[in-house]
Length: 145
Image 1: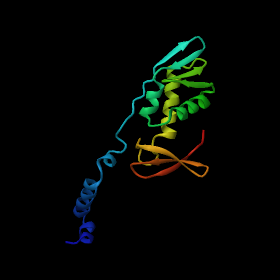
Image 2: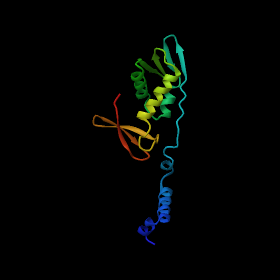
Image 3: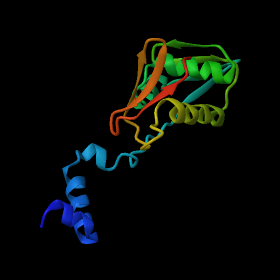
Image 4: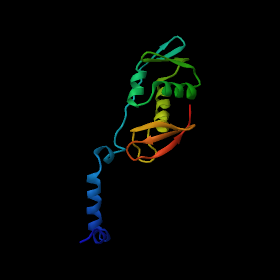
């Protein structure tokens, strides 16, 4: 039987689909299955909030720590600075609020809106920024911080 005849039958279609899925690289098969667990560790010093494992959080997300810090500063409305491995935020920020900001960041700047994969990178073309998925190849615009 030819491929055209196989595709016309349900059994043939399923066989062809199995062959295509088997030929995909392992990273593309379970694109949306991976989960990143972010556990920020914070300290409150007088009127400052210090995220002690900030650089590690940025590395888990495969993003530049300055980009993540700029997002947190803009969304929380509080100035911040990076000192070594730590992020120092002026003002008190609760752990729940910081987790919410990290979830927003992942949704907007890390997670692919097409396949749900987390293997993405931010590229710039001319004056525009795009989130490019390394799994499905989708390219979506993202805002500049």
